[in-house]
Image 1 (tube, protein in one colour):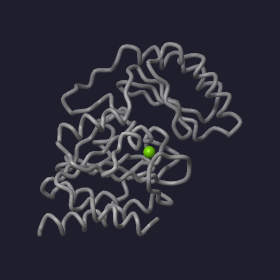
Image 2: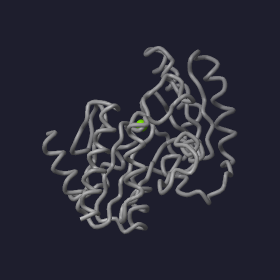
Image 3: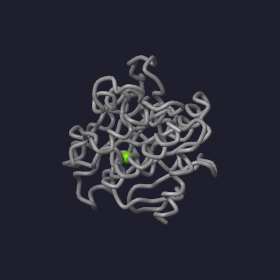
Length: 250
Ligand SMILES: [Mg+2]
């Protein structure tokens, strides 16, 4: 499969207009037990910055995090790298920092659930509230998740289940729709996407035969390629940069 992936990256390098897109947590940044401590892997970020500097090449980071949060973690004004936040609900910098009015209601209803389940945590974002369970026992996760869904599920526009996180969305959005809109706006003729979470499946599902989707880590996926873990992402992006750079010079 690996040699097959190398061939696919070579082919992508030669595409007319290339979109290179990546998820953030668990893909560009190693998973950490404290989500507020997540930072990009410099070995993965460097080739991404290189790709963004090449002609006819767009680079997009698409995350469940709030847009401003991703921007802060990537570092100030990474040239040419676009960011879509909140699973697609925050497509651009000009969307403003308004918080959806339902968010306060979600957070108030979830507060007692957090209190019942030590280790669980709320993350309040402009368009969703994430209920993090990564520091809760496996048994506790199921109970806490069920309680949270009972409290907020009926009033949320959407509930997204990620890796040890439940996300209560005030608006309907998914990464797949967001990526489709972005690639149409950029006129991309081929797309590369790498991601590790359940929510990234929406992107793998909208990829076409000329595109390349890479799933990071184990689990069922619609992606055609897979790498073992987050440390492998840097190698993939470095190879893609090499292929694209060679093509755009020649
Ligand atoms: Mg992720």
